Length: 304
Image 1 (cartoon, rainbow, N blue to C red):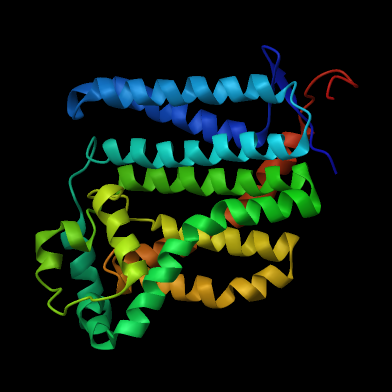
Image 2 (image 1 turned 180 degrees about the vertical axis):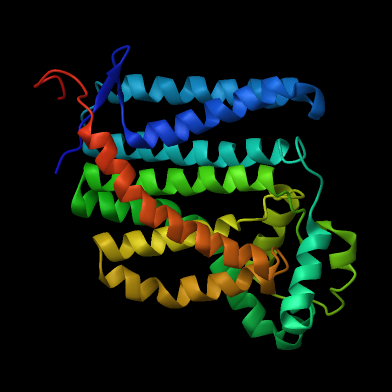
């Protein structure tokens, strides 16, 4: 069923835009309010404003764009790139309110398990397993748009909007989590890094994963684990719209959860909280969409 739509200044606004564009605007206002606590605040705020302008521009183009393939590329590309900017922006805001909480994470994991999972998992290290773990960690980036394309061309534009809305919601939840409970991550916290004594050797996928770690990852962005949170949402959406895809993705998604700890990207707490955050989003999203549909969004026939 086609969703109701809101038209604002001639632009069509959907739930995806509320959480994605609205989320980035909120983070920008937060950066303005606490600019004195940021490194290079002008760059942070300026980059956000550029992405906001580009996003609004794509909404204007989509109002008139008709070819199905181009609509998918522009819509999905602009939304998913904005997810990345939300991640980067929230990372810049992580220490606005609180300091790093890694010591607390290490302490409660020791108390719960009686050992450090980061240390115990090193006993499993082997070249084939490590390469598989890095493969599933990297292929997550490919699943993002590919699953969207499958949903769009198999089930239609509204189904893809549902997919993007769920992804936007979980990305925003993760971004807010980084700010409310900042965790540097095992490779960026000295006490955690000191525990990582076993060599982690791998092949081509390990090289790609380490490139991502070196050039995209910075300290933070850890809890909830975006990989685990987003992967859970994607896995659920694959079940909702493709069925077969859910079972095909099962070994990848389950391995991906483990890979975040195995590959030293996250603590096990990040993984657990990431999955829990995704489940909460999956439970809340239908109610939010129903609330949106109850709104009167314009006179009959206003939507194309």
